Image 1 (cartoon, rainbow, N blue to C red):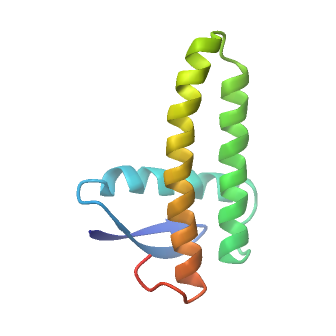
Image 2: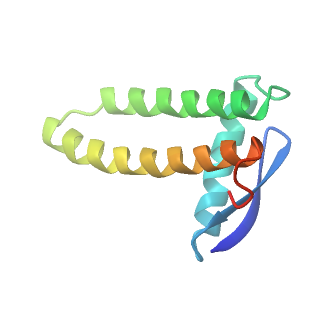
Image 3: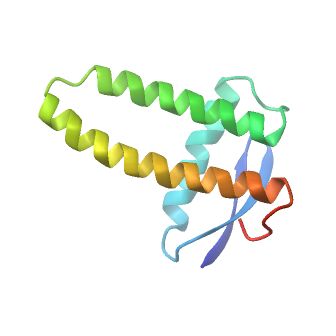
Length: 106
């Protein structure tokens, strides 16, 4: 596992990821940071701040899916998106466990 820090809402989070994923995880962290700042959630508790960011990203994803035309493409994309959401959800849960003191290797 590789270790790295991401900054969201002015707070640094130490996380682990697979080697080579650091750039991608950094980009995802910046996306969440942008949404957190846009929502005015800076200064909230870490779980609440991350929840706001996740909800804003989910809303954008929902809007993107509504704008697509082909149902066949939607099903394939929905499956791929669901896999990415599961991976992101797992990482958020690891961060929350770490923040709550239950897992020091999040």
